[in-house]
Image (cartoon, one colour):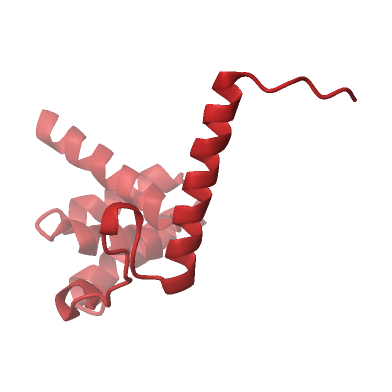
Length: 128
């Protein structure tokens, strides 16, 4: 392979690359200072940000009944969508997180799939 002589543009690019590399080495060596003196120190999350919501309570009788109805529908050979509609009709007055959790348990959906089914059920209910 034959090397070509460097042009002014390639020399400028080499200089810029070298400058970027030296700034990166500075960040890597002390972990606190980035380009332009900006702080790049890693901070601990605040307690409010670190706190996660408790999972919804699925032990109440009407919720258990809706989950059982969804599982029974699937056992009968009905689709997951049918099971989700049964659960949604029974739990329509509850909040979204609880209904989605019930879909996961009673319609054997993934959390992301359950959220999609919740959205579709809610849309169809509004149209009625």
